[in-house]
Amino acid sequence: MLATATTAMKSTANAGTSAANRGARAGFEPRLLAGPSFDAGPESWEQHRARLGDLPAASPSRIIPSIERSGLIGRGGAGFPVGRKWRSVAERSGRGAVVVANGAEGEPRSAKDRDLMHLRPHLIIDGGLTAAQAIGAEDLVVYAGSEHGDAVRSMSRAIAERAGRDPVAVRLVEAPRGYVSGESTAVVHYLNAADARPTSTVERPFERGVGSRPTLVQNVETLAHAALIARFGDAWFREAGRGRTRGTALVTVSGPVRTPGVREIEYGVTLAELLAISDGATAEVGAVLVGGYFGGWASTQGLWELPLDPLDLAEAGLGFGCGLIGLLDAELCGVQATERIVRYMAAESARQCGPCIFGLGAIATALERLAACRPARDDLENLTRWSTQIVGRGACHHPDGAAALLTSGLRVFRDEFDRHHRARCAHRVAGLGEG
Amino acid sequence: MGLSLQVDPVRCEGFGMCAELLPEAIELDDWGYPIVREGILPEHLRELAERAVEVCPVLALRLVSPERVRSTLQTRSLAPHTALRSHGGG
Image (cartoon, rainbow over all chains, first blue to last red; front, top):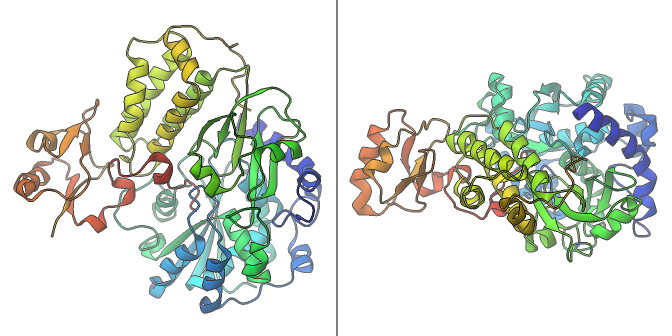
C-alpha cells in the first residue's frame, strides 16, 4: 500500500511544481522547492552550490539569535520554536553535541519529508551543518525512513558527494519502518541501542541523547529552512507568510483532488486556495483531516476560508501538524474513515505502555464494531470516556494522538456515529477515503 | 517542598497495588493501569505515597519534584492538541 502511495505522491509532486506557483499570490516564489524541476530528480552538489553558493560559516552567537528572530518553528508536527530549542542544546553542549536530521516520516499519507530528501538532499545537509555549528555538534546523523527508498538513495549519494569537505562527520542511518520510530526519544534509543521504541527516561534528548551527549533531533524540512536563513537572513525569511506565522511550509494534499501531492505554500493561504492550486476537488468534500494522524478531523463549515497558519488553526481547535491535508469524499463514511486510522494507530503502538496497548486496542475493537454497524450497547459511551482517559499516559504521545483523532471524529461525525450506534450507516462501504 | 507522583508507563504492568494503598491520589483505568492525580501530593498522603512507591513490584512509581515530571508522563495535564509533541522530532 505504501509503495503505491509513494509512487502516486512522487508523480503528483512532479506536477506540483508548476501548480505551486500558478495558484499562489503574485510574487510568491517557492523556497525549499526552488531549483531544478522535480523530473530532474535529486539536485547534485554542483547544482546546489551553483544555485545557492557555499554555506556561510555560522557562529553560535550570530546564528541562534537569527533563527530566533526568524520565528522558524519545527515542521515535524509540534511546531516548537527552533531558536529556543537550539539554545537549550547549545547551553548543554560542553561534551560535544549531536544533530539528528529526522526524516523518518512514519506518517503514512504525508510525503513532504521523503520528497524533500529525495529532491533537495544538500539543503537538508546544509541545515544540519548550520545546526551543528550553532550548538557545537561534532556529528550529524541523517535518519531517513528505510521505506523511503528514493530518499535514502538520494541522501546517501549526497553525503558521498561532499565527503570530507564538511566540518563535522555526516552519516546516514536508515530508520526502521514504523509510525513511532521518528519520535525523538525513539530516534535516540535506536541510534544508541538499535531499538526504535520511545523511552520513559526523565532526561530529554537535548540533555542526554545519542552516546549520552546532548542531542538535537530536528525534522529535515525544518533544517532545510535553517539552511536558507543561514544564507539569506531572518529578515528575508520573514518576507513570506500572509499572517502571524512567517515563512513557507511544505504540505501534502491527499484525497479527491485533481492534483494531490506535496507543495510549498506560504503560511496563511486558505484551504480554498490550496484546493485551487491542487486543481480543484473531484468530489464533494465531507470533512478534512488536518495535520495528519496526530491532528484531527474538521468539518467543512467555515473551513475553506480558514488560514493555514498554525496560530489560526490552533484557535480553531486544529493543528498544522505535519502539514497533511486529507480530504474525505462526502460519500464516504466518517465513522469508517476514523476507524481505519485509529486501527492503524493501535497496530503501530510500540506495545510498551498499558494505556496504549490495551486502551488503543479496546478503542479499535469498539470502533470496528461501530463501523460495521454491529455495536455493543456501550461502545459509543466507552469510546467517549476512553478518548480522554488514555491521554498523557504513555511514554510518548502516541496514545494522545490517537485519542485526539478519535475525539475529533466523534465531534465532526457525531450524527454518523449516532446512526452507527443504531446500526444504520447512510454511506456506501467502499474506498473509505484512504487516499 | 512538595512532591508529585509519577508512573513510568513502560515499567508499569498494572499490578494495581498503588491504587489500593492510595485511592485518594490514584485510580485504575478499565485495564487496571493507574491514573495519577496531577499536581503536588497533599502532605498528609506523603507517608502512604512513600509506601506505595516501595511496594510497587516493578518500581514503576516515583515521587519526584514537580519540575522533574516529564510532560509526556503527566496525567491529563493538557488538552490533547496542546499536549501533542511531534513524532517528527520538531
